[in-house]
Length: 560
Image (cartoon, rainbow, N blue to C red; front, side):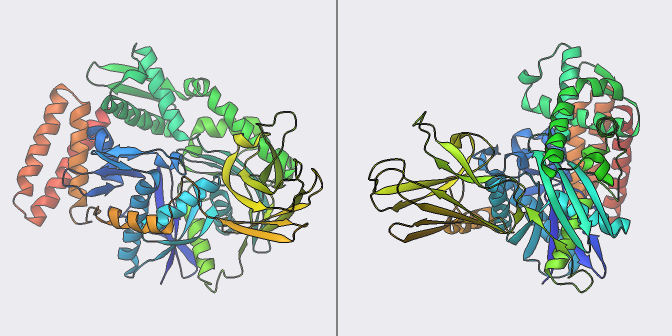
């Protein structure tokens, strides 16, 4: 059975298969490679994923959700049509849609995938991504860092035999920056840094808030439908600024407007650029490189195409960034290529993709100056090459302790409580005066992100091992199976008739956004289409869909 590569994005997701001697992007029912990472529950209880769901964000905000990737690995809950879903649940619907699209494209069952994740995802976020794969009916043994996938695809597209890159991966919801070397069929990550809460969505909100300020509105007090509509129009405005220097945002009900150009957007976005520069500075510091030692700055992700972002990077880095292939597709192509490596495809089986530990892994130690606030003791530091095994030696802080608890954390903070808690190991030790025990703690972290901890008391020779696979935010295997059965009760909308659903959803959105003559035009077009749909004549329906889309295109051309 084929293994597919998946770029599970905040804004859009893609699937890719390695066929022949190249990665091939898999089309969705609309013949497009980009599937919006949006989920909506229809009135009939069916699950809509992609373009239809994106339209319903405005017309049915109470039944729709987007940008849930930003909350992977947290206890965030989304209520859609009165039912609660975790970010993993919603991501599983997107993955299931991509799985079904791949099966239609390939004509065979797909049971395994390589999924790309931001390099700066922590252990909980990575585990949640694998969990989403399981809930979608996919075996996910391997996660690949998005910059690694991008560098792999870019090196093969460019044909370069070696090079050193700064990969700037800026999507809808996350930023990853990596220093990557490519040589002798090896893609090696040197260092990573990132911000999992920074992306193109933040520009949408900046434009929306600017609109509200200019028109004396309070963005935070808008209704869910008003906010969804304004953010959709702001995104459209942002996209227009990618291809032209000026755009206008118009909200129909009160004919309120905002004229904006790239210079104004750059001024409004200084806070975003400050956060970007911090991430870039971090990765250059950790890599020990400077810009003169790097061959290219490669832009990846849809948000990296924005002129304000490209100009800022060129100014800050003193090097013109380059785009190799399509920024929207390059991560998926890299994931698809790595899926081919995993399948041992002849043309690429010798490719090696190394990975690193994105965050420091360590244990907590006694703080003599504040006994209630333990300190972080690093064992495997960030940017260590994987697989990796390192050991730390510790002792007993108290007299004649009979047991000790080794807390395991992930992060860079001084106090252990400020880092991500992964678990602990409790074990008995030989009672001795304080500082006389010798406790060895060994961390082994593999390429698949599995951490094994082994604790040895040299006094009693007792050894305890633990593979960290669960915590309070994670489900057990039994819970995953139970949730899988529950989610399978939600059926994805079948591909037949999906174009009709998209046109109808688009009409509902436009009806909610427009007024006057244009709203009447939407209503008239919708009425005509629904009348033809009752005929069940395929050719008449096809013609009616084309005519209705033409009306909507004209109306959207008049009103952003």
